[in-house]
Image: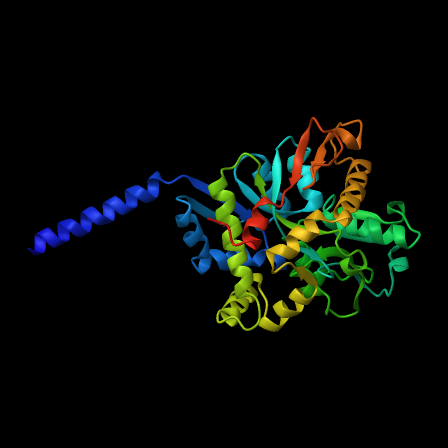
Length: 349
């Protein structure tokens, strides 16, 4: 009898393993940022597995410590989805010919990106300084906007391309009295209280322009898109004060981000999170988004981020109403409300 029971157990285990292996597997890449830490919690709490099982697939959530490298890997075909900003989604995969859809608008930076200086009190003090940043990223965009708004140009500073994995450590160890960086949270939170340090400009001065996304290959299956969206908005409910899982979720994300709970809560205050899917849908449909993407594509083209293209119209950017900025015959970045709207309507089935 014991042999029969053991045999049945082994058969069941092998059958379950075989079924798991038969499921198609899709991969999401993410990197550290306040608005993307929820993906790590979604995996750890079993929420990703729950939604993947619901749609008969496997989903791997992979941390890539170098932000730009995560997008490069997505563009190269190593991942089916990736976290990125609106500008980087345009200038890396879209310009690179990878047809991509904005599946989820998670938030926009409202103070989470900033310019940090030693011995300075305003943007005007940047003149003549060497500035470390992830060049041609949203940090570069933020700097350009700050300079423009203060009657300066990039010719007034010297840019030093620096990986986000190193920039915080380099700033804290820099003995130069004019050390300056542009970075984002959680790094920004870690360096802003260093001696003689001031944040002279942050993204709250350009609200709604640095948008944080989950981007997916446009031809990815419905099952993957629905599962990711469902998992994301389940986590969003956990992150709202009063939910039974609130403390657990915030504590996990704070630890994953490398800080304390109080630090993470402070970071959330400078992140305009769209906890409700309906809020993200409304933002996606707004005229402000079109204005922002016009500004972003102009900046990107002017800074050589369109490779050898002769015009900023080389790539088309499509919006929920069907309108397109740029080339209608070469649409490669699509702002789509389909799955967020399903979440808002409780129709992710």
